[in-house]
Amino acid sequence: MTEGGALPAPWQTCTIAEIVQQTPTIKSFFLRLSEPFVHIAGQHVDVRLTAPNGYVAMRSYSIASPPTASDIIELAVERLPDGEVSPFLHDVAAVGDEIELRGPLGGHFLWPEHTTAPVLLIGAGSGVVPLMAMIRQRRALAQVAATALLLSARTRRDVLFADELLSTETADPQFNLALAITREAPERASDFARRIDSLMVAEVVARLSGAPGHVFVCGSNGFVNIAADGALAAGLAAPAIKTERYGG
Amino acid sequence: MVTRGFTGRQAGEGQSDRIPPGQHLVEHFPVLSAGPTPRIEPADWKFTLKIGPRAVKTWNWTEFNALPKTKMTRDIHCVTSWSKLDTAWEGVIVDDILADAGVERPTDFVLAHSYDGYSTNVPLADLASGKAMVALKYGGQPLPRDHGGPARLLVPHLYFWKSAKWVNGLQFTERDEAGFWELRGYHIYGNPWREQRYSND
Image 1: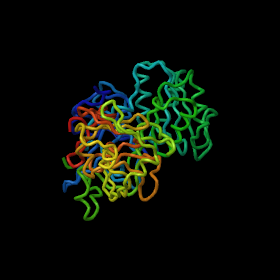
Image 2 (image 1 turned 120 degrees about the vertical axis):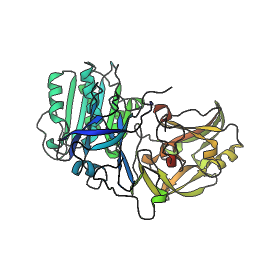
Image 3 (image 1 turned 30 degrees about the vertical axis):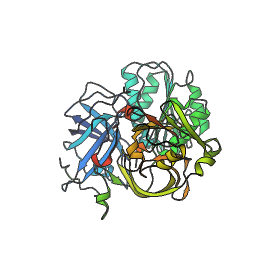
Image 4 (image 1 turned 180 degrees about the vertical axis):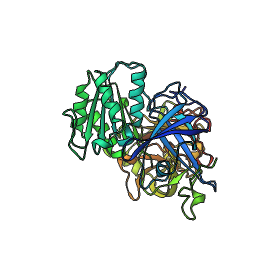
C-alpha cells in the first residue's frame, strides 16, 4: 500500500523552455519534459547537474505548476548566494539548455483533491512554491473548500506570484490571502507588518469558515516551527499539520 | 549527461571517498520533518521494546539512562542530498537495549516508532553489532528537540530518515514492514552508497 508518489520515477532530460525573473531573488524555470508526467500539487522533482569530470550535484525543487496535460512544468528557484545549484540555474542556465530531472516525488505533502474541510496554507519566501501549485490545482478543479494562505516575505517585491495571488483572492470569495511583510509597511489592511507568530496564525484561522482540516507549512525550519506551533495553539490537530522544511 | 556550463563545487579536499554519489557536504545541521516538532519532557518519556504486538519491556528516562552508554562519531547522509561528516553522538546501542530486556533475535526485522506517529523499518542486522543506537546526546549536549530530543534512533550507515526522531520504541516484526516514508515512495532499505532513495532505485 502506498499513499501516492511511489511510481518509478526514472531520470529524464528536459529542456529549459522559458526563464522568468519573478522577484529580485527568485526565477521561474519552465521545463519541457521529454517524458511528461501528471503530478499531485505539493510534489517535487530532483534536479541533477553533471560536471565534465563526472561530479554530480543534486537538489530537490517543488513544482509550482498544477498538474495538467501540459508537458511543461514550472519550478521557482531562489538564488542562494552561498549555494551551488541555485546560482548555476540563475546565472548560467539558459533557454534551450538541457537539464536532468526525475519525478514526481514525495507522498506526504500532497493537496487533498476531495476535501470539503477548509485548508490553511502557510509559507515564507520561496516556500510558497508547493502551496502555489495547490492553489492553482484548487482553481483548476473548481474546488470550493475555503482556503487561506498566510505568506511571509521581506518586502512586497519579494512576494512570489503576488499578482496571481491577489487576483485569485479577488475572483474567489472562498480564498483568503494574508501577507506578512517583515521589512516594510504592508499596502493592505488585511496584511500584517511583522514576522509570523501564534496570534497571526490564529487570526488567519479565524478568517476561514471553519476549523481547517488540512494545514500545509513550507519554509525554513525556524519559520515552520513557529507556524506549526501556532496552528497547534489555535487548536488544530498535529496529524492535520504537514510541514516541509528547506533542506541543506 | 554533462550539464552545459556546470563545474560545481566538487567534494571537499581529501573527503570525496566519504561522500556518497549525489550528496554534497554541509557544515550546519539541517532540520527536516514531516509535521510539528513534538514536545516530550524527559519526565514523561518512555521507551518500549515489543515483539509483534507484545510489549517485552518499558524503560522510563532514568532507567534508560542507567543502561551502558556508547559514543559514536559518524558521517550522516540525508536523502535530500546533504551529508555531514564526523557527527558525535552518545547513547545506548541497540545491542545493550536488547540485552537489558533479555531479547536476542526473535525476528530479523524491526520497526522503529516515534512520538509523532512516525515509523521506519530497519533490518535487525543493521541495528545490532554496534551499528546503531538510541542517541541521547549530540555534540556532548542533550539532544535538541529539533534533532529528535530527548532521544532519536541513529542508524548512520543508512539514509537519515531511518534515524527516527523522537523515538519511543522498537518493535520486532515477522516481515520487513514499510514505515512512514517507505509507504510514501521512499526506498525500503536506503543505502546511500547505492543511492537507494526512492522505491525502485
